[in-house]
Length: 383
Figure 1 (cartoon, rainbow, N blue to C red):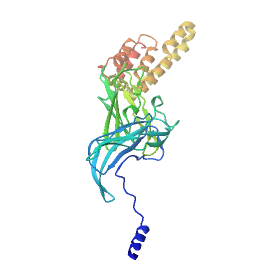
Figure 2: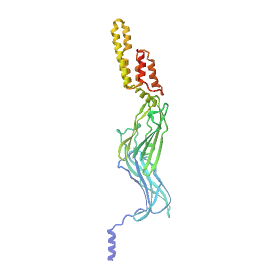
Figure 3: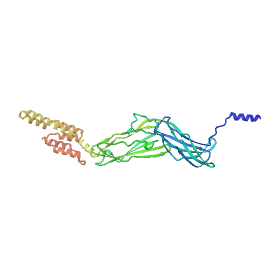
Figure 4: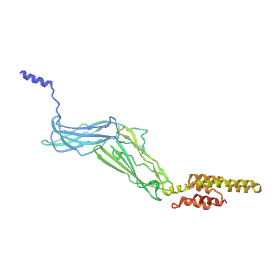
C-alpha cells in the first residue's frame, strides 16, 4: 500500500505532457517585416501533420478577395520524427500579395484526404489574419503614371543594337530595356515609359511580361523595346527615366534608372567636325580681312565730301565690318549653320563661298572645308 501511494505521488509531481494531435493542418506566415505593405510578398507555408499514410488527397484554399497568391513548388511529402513519434508531414510553399490595407484574411485551407485503414476525411485550418500597411506616399516616391510597387530587388538591363550616337544615314537603332523584380508579379510592374520627341521617329514593340518561380519567391520581368530613327540629321538626347519602388529588404523607397540616350547620324557629326577645320591661321586671315574693311571704310568716309549721302550709305553697307564680325564669331565656334547664316549677310555676290558651305553641311560625303579657300571665296567679290 505504501509503494502504491508513492507511485501516485510521483505521477502527480510530474504532470502528463500534452499529446501531439494525430492530425493537424495550419497556415504559417513568415513575413520579413512586422509592417507589411500592400503588394509586398509574404512567404506562407501550408503544413499538415498526419499519423498515417494517405492514399488519396486534395489540398485546396478557399477564395480570397484580399490576396493574390501562387504556389512556388510542388507539395513536399516526407516522414519526420516529432516528440518521439513518426509522422507524415506535407507542406506547400506559397507567395501571398495583399491587395488592400487593414486587417486581411487568407484561407482557411481544406485537405480532403484518405488514410490507410480509414475513410475519407476533410481537415480544415484556421484562416490567416494579417494587418497590411499602405504603400508610402508622396516624394520621393514618383514613378511613371504614379505607379507604385514593392520588390526585394530591382535591376535593369539596357541593350542597344548599334551605337545610337553615330548612326548611318537612314539607320534605325533598337533599344531593349528589361526590368527584373524579385518578389513581385509581372502585372505589378509599371507600364512602358512614353517616348515622344519632335525630332525622333519612334516604333514601340508589344510589351512582354514574364514570370519565373524560385524557392525564394517569384521573379517578374517586363521587356520594353523601341526602334528609333532621327527625323533630321541633328542629334538629340532622350532624357533618363527613373523608376521608383519600395525595397522590402531595406524598407525604403529606392530607384533604378533607364540611362539617357544620345541619338544622331554620324554624317552630321562629321560635318560639324569639318567646321572645326577653321584653324588659328584662318582666324588671322579673317582678322586681316576685317582690318582691311575698316581701313577702306575710313577712306570712303574721308572722301565722302565728293560723294552723295546715298553713295556713302552704299559704301558703308559694302565695307561695314559688322557682317565680318559675325562671320568671325561663327568661324570661331565651328558651327557651320551659324557660319552659313553670317556669310549670307555679307554684301555682294558670295556665291562661290556659300556653295562651299552648302556642300559641307548638306552633302554627307563631302570632304572637310579648306578654311583658306572659303575665306578667299568670300573675299573675292570684295576686291
